[in-house]
Each structure stands twice: as C-alpha cells, then as structure tokens.
Image (tube, rainbow, N blue to C red; front, side):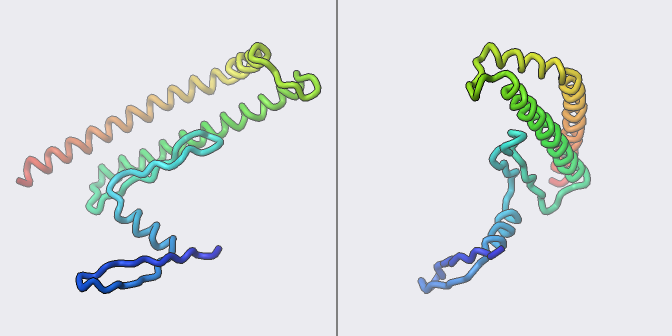
Length: 160
C-alpha cells in the first residue's frame, strides 16, 4: 500500500518557510497521541455501532486503565452481538422476501410484519440474554467510574 505523502508548511518566527514531508500514517499517529478525548467514528454498516478510540492519558492510574480496558471489552462485545444479529436478520429477511414475493415484486408492510414478528419471536431469548448482560456490563462500568472519581477526588484533596 502506497503511503500518501503530504506537504506540510510551517511558518517560522523569521517568516521563512520550513517544509517537511510527513506520511499520512505518521500524521495519524501524531494526531492520536495528541488527542485528549475519546474519538467516535462512523457507524459500522453491518452492526450500526460507532467505533470508539479511547483516550489514554499520559499518567493513567491503574483504576483508570482498568475502566478504559473494560470499556473497550464492552464495546467489542456490543459490536460482536449486533454484527451477528444484523447479519442473521438480513439473511433471514432476504430468504423470506424470496419465498413470499411474486416475480420480483416487493412485499408490503403487512406481509413484512409477518417476518418481523417471526424473527422477534425466534430471537427473543437472545435479546433477553443480551439485555441482562448489558445491564451487568453497565453496572460494572458504573462501579469502576465511581472508583475513578473517588480516586481523583482524594488525589485533589491531598495534593493541594
């Protein structure tokens, strides 16, 4: 893969121009190193979940690192569930449309409601398990977030 080169121009105090060639991957690395907040990307076309690049502070504490890693784990779990779910949905919807349509005619809302009902009935137990796990993950994240905030408060209190 060819690395895109861009020309960056920087004004020096003497009003002379300094020119530096920087690869796009180098710029991206520099940009990620300088970021001070989480970055949210465009939604995945299959899962519809937006990927998050989590900010890593320079002096990240053990508890903050634990929270960040847990958030990444939950994000990956969430992405995996919805990718599998939406893939199954698209596959089954296509099969339903092919088996119920007449010579390429699209199905109306009433006909498709039959499929939606069948799909939801078929996967209700997976949705229930997902919601249960989602609550468990959220409470674990809340517990870790609380620990981080207490740690920050105590640090500010005693480092004055």
